Image (cartoon, rainbow, N blue to C red; front, top):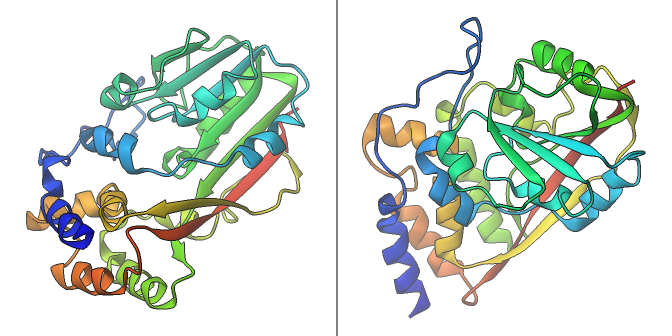
Length: 278
């Protein structure tokens, strides 16, 4: 059955997650320490991470005045950069992870650079839109915002956004996932608290534009769900410490017993902080 197939894939997911030493903290400038949590799992990240909805991008773009250049900081595999490239003449997308950039979506008007968000090579006062998706909680806020002010044009917009905990309308599955997430608390980095709060607690020293809460909707198999969980930074911490998956076999069995069809509907709340930089 599909459940047996999903169980096999879930138990053998370590094929996708290379068990290596923790990533080196690095990038441009010896005084800067940057956390790189996703280099060792860039392949799985590209496969299993959800995509932000089109409604989010439409909402952001309505406030953009000029469409010459966007900067997508902490781009990862370029999920946001590729969406921006349909609307702006050029997108500069930066990240500290070589493996993420190597797996990034390619398009002629996207330039990928291995650079930290706090120290970019973008010229002064050239950027019309700055975006950060699911990454600003890893940045040095003060240094990044100084860089944003340096590169921004006078009418530029900044948009930072994240999704937080996965939810299900299936009551038992939702409770199982909520309880499991709470049980992993010891393996999350301190910065995760910003995501849990929907970025409400991050410093945001810009003229803010009120934004609604958006939603990512997806229909996933059990294997897709467990694949997504394995991309958590907490999953990587757990695997390095214990040498096995963070997902207990008992949870997989409980979830499989509740799976009503081959796929189940899930959603992620998406939170946006939007502001005028000038």
